Amino acid sequence: MTISLRTLTGALALSTILAVSGAQARDLIMYNGGDVTSLDPQKMSGDWEDRVAGDIYEGLMTEDAKAKPIPGEAESYELSDDGLTYTFHLRDDAKWSDGEPVTAEDFVFAFKRLMDPKTAAQYAYLQYPIKNAEAINTGKIEDLDQLGVKAIDDKTLEITLERPTPFFLGALTHYTAYPLPKHLIDKVGDQWVQIGNIVTNGPYKPVEWVPGSHVLTAKNDQWHDAASLKIDGVRFLSLEDVNAGFKRYRAGEIDYMTDYPKDQFDYIQKNMPGEGHFVPYAGLYYYVMNNKKPPFDDMRVRKALSMAVNREVIGPQILGSGEPAAYGWVPPGMANYPDEGAKVDWADEDYKTRLEEAKKLLSEAGYGPDKPLNITLRYNTNDNHKRIAVAIAAMWKPLGVNVELSNAEVKVHYADLREGDFQVARAGWLADYNDPTNFLDLLKTGVEMNYGQWSNTDYDKILEEAAVTRDMEKRGDLLKQAEKLALDANAAMPIYYYLSENIVSPKVKGFEDNVFDKHRTRWMSIEE
Image (cartoon, rainbow, N blue to C red; front, side, top):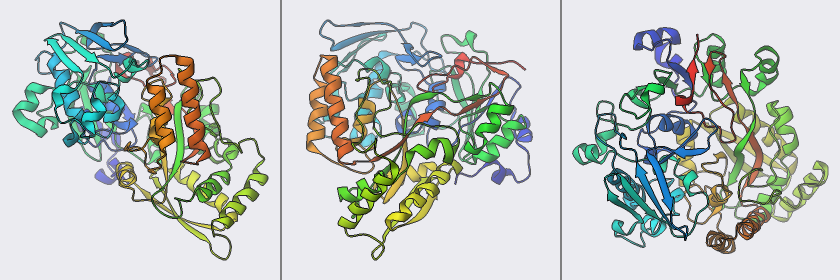
């Protein structure tokens, strides 16, 4: 587990830490969950890192308070008639925090570095709509200059796509599309992200970073709209002990929780009206099974384990906060998709029937009371994840499955998943842009976030066909076809669709619920 502030400081209270470090009354104190791995946007991979990145950087496009794409460093853009070429015009007053101008070449440099295989950027594939991006990132093209990104002049950037992409402007809000300070990286190389060196182009800039403890930001007075900022800075706390965090929130030591103990749901609703923000948003909680390790390469085993999970009780009873059961892979309400997505063919069966079918499947695969299936189930350290894992282990027990639980801090957990060092593991995905491909790509061959390494050529071909289909209704039908194929193969195990789970102090104003659960500090204020 990440070292908590309590571990670092013994009995020293959080309020004392804040006073010593100079945090002021108008700073926002945020429980941010996991520990930030890097301040380099191309080295990030989690929502806890996105919350920091979205404050200290700004892409061509950014998000408004409702998480809709709006112009960021780009003041305007044009799109060619064939839907392939975007021409972005940067703000004249776009600057880095050291006063140097943000140029089109900073974006060219950043996109080339993102796609360079040597960078090993985990989320590079999110920008594969750009011409030659995938070929360069996978080593098929070695010349980075063939990437479809070009600086026309210092303030004009041209991006050419492989094919028309309806969600591309939304994808440009993601941290993989942020510019990098070429002038600084040319000078100091990889040391550019160290405090004392780093410059950023967003509303805020990092001024302190203590791994295992926090990231502290302050206003960036070089940002083009700095005068509008009502919060001086944010302390992003690296805490994974959600119960301890909630106690500190109730004591007034934290202003904003990005998670909470699920067993406190009723208490929050009854005793803290208006502070709990629990609304549907585009996210999926799921388990992955390692398709490269027996017996999870056997579809019967994967299906039996999935059927035996009683999803209907997890949100209302295990968590107590009502998350809806997931029998499909794409969350409801995603744009460019049929109103009713695909679902597993046994979704409407009663649980008792499903459990009996699961026993038969596992027996056919060679497992049962006389030969139990022993599984290690991994999750990242969090009381809510543990609660779910304990419940699901109990649901598998009638099948003759013995479960050993294993947990690790979040960055270690996901590093192990990417390395394939697991049998069954908890994972989650929050939409980066409003299109079903953001979820379906997680099961595509070769994608690093396809943790279970499920691979199906027909699935990949359908996604490729959908990518070149301009008829949006036909495209949506193809994507639904791909989703059904993956569900029938039990490629992974959807469990529930997320509800946002923010607890926000009444003194924090401007916090807007939205389906992407993105809440940039620039839109908020604090009223003591």
